[in-house]
Image 1 (cartoon, rainbow, N blue to C red):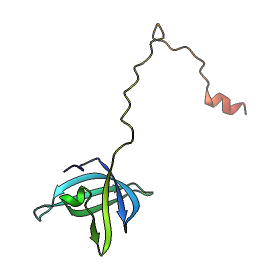
Image 2 (image 1 turned 90 degrees about the horizontal axis):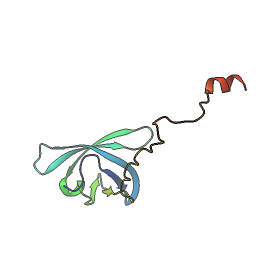
Image 3 (image 1 turned 180 degrees about the horizontal axis):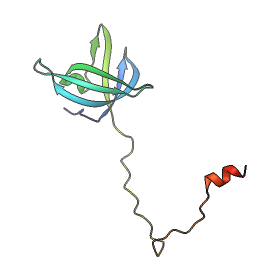
Image 4 (image 1 turned 30 degrees about the vertical axis):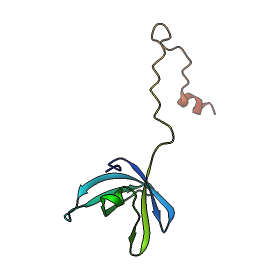
Length: 109
């Protein structure tokens, strides 16, 4: 499978982009060649869907649910993850700067 757990997918419903979801789990279904796919739907509020799909459908092949066209499209980040920036040593390890108390600031207003 090219689409797997933790991947982000865009679900197309009726040939239109409908919602983003993260694949939370993929476990074998009782029927050979089919998978129980748990989707965390990224809406407000969050929702969890459980769909039973075959491998081609998990990987983007179109299918229907009650006659409505559906397709999952794996989303790939447009930019590679950035490398962490190493900490800057200011010579002595202590940072100099002003400490501003939000509590004192609130009292003065």
